[in-house]
Image (spheres, one colour):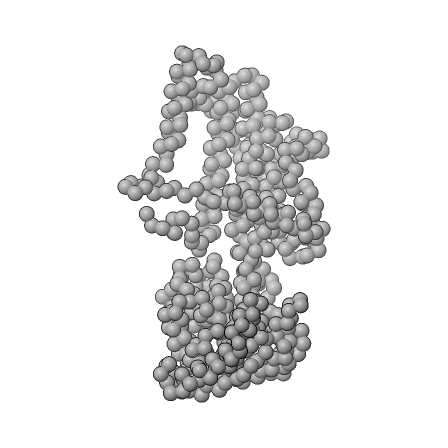
Amino acid sequence: MDGAKTALTGKAGKLRNGLAEEPKPAAGRTFSLQKWTFVPGILFFILWEAFSRINESVKLFNPNFLPAPTALLQEAWELARTGIIAESILSSTIRILLGFVIGSAAALALGVIMSKYKSVEFWFSPVLNLVGPIPALALLPLFIIWFGIGEFPKVLLIAWTTFIPVLVYTLDGFKSVPSTLIRSAMSLGASERQIFARVMLPSALPNFLVGAQVSLGLSFSALIVSEMMGAKSGLGYIIVDARNYFKISNMFIAIILIGLEYSLFSYLLKLVERKVMAWRKGGIRDAVEK
Amino acid sequence: MKLEVRSVGKGFGERTILKNVDLTVRDREFICILGHSGCGKSTLLNMIAGYLLPDTGTIAVDGEAIRGPSKARGMVFQEHALFPWMTVLDNVSFGPEVQKMPKAKAKETAMEFLKLVGLETYASHYPAELSGGMKQRVGIARALASKPDILLMDEPFGALDVLTREMMRMELQKICSQLKPTILFVTHSISEAVYLADRVVVMKHGAIADIFEVGIKHPRTPSSPGFGDMMSRIERVLMDEEHSEIAEAKVGT
């Protein structure tokens, strides 16, 4: 039991060290770098374009393997006119939203119950430690056999990938509520329920959000893979479909769209985090003025 | 209100922290518990607060044994323990609110106590934006706002710099002269104890070594008649052992 517990929290700790730190744009001495964050991205595409164009004449390898961005834009426009892109984005978005929200909500609920009732933790924690580390993608074929190729197994897979990290972080958050905060609340006359709602929950909220941020990446891979296996729509489906017909440009379009959609979701989550955690100060930006 | 500690003992595992402690705190009395770190003074305070339970003996308020934390005994912590996600005003109104006071009335009460500690202009700030001394003042206002019978303070100024500490002493003294609360104040500063207390309880190795009635008229300064004398009398009790023994006690903590 003890071993199981440390395994759960240990995992959280390791994950957090790697991922919780937000890259802070460093401000230059003479001019602010912040205004120029788009430059590396633009440069990347320019280099890509140049390389592809050169490759078309030099033929280092088959030019079809790496189409130029401008060519991709043109293809994307063609594809968008058929309505496939809009349809794919819509169905992918619905799946990820459903799965992500269901997974997070379930993790939060179980986290609350597990931290409230010792016996629930006793029974669940070892089992979760057992099944938690299994890559969700390994479960997909099984899910398909069990639940068919409809929307349900896909949403379930995404929910499951979201569920485990969020639960681990949330539990860790509940466990690391400073005892002096609980003591103060008790001495101020708060009931157990009030302590839970007004001290434990807000105190664990930052951890929950970090868990959500971590699992967002994982749930995106679950989304794409589940769309690559037995789906008729979605960004992952475009990739498989393009492979079958050897339309490499379509693959690139889908890949870029996946990246864009992930960035959008990640940004939205960051916005929520910033709003919820307005009270928090710290980080390098508050440490020194430059 | 009368707090009675009767032959209380407490140990953690093999180590005995407190043995046979007897103490009576009268209504509206300011008592300082003074001692080296590790002498058990914080443990005693935590037991009075109800966070820990005595192994032997009883602690009772007005004849009723303490069974757990209660709003009747407010606590101010050394590390302030403010809720970082609440504004200063919400922190102070937390007590009245959880005690079912209507929200508007609770905020009003909180504002009164913020005025008392001189922080009404910081009501909408978050604790992270305040200095150490200000946080501690909010901590005091928060504890007072739920109208405790006795205020327990666990080295509240221990983490502050010397100048702020001096200011906080005066501030606390001012508040006391206005509200006349009952206070149990843990410290390891002799001058702080003599400056504030009606009675100074000196603790050593888990037992009460001596109790001093200070009896100097407020407001006190280090040059008040009897102040230096009282300090050296207390110091003699605190330090009367061989230095090696004190060193040993410190190693033990």
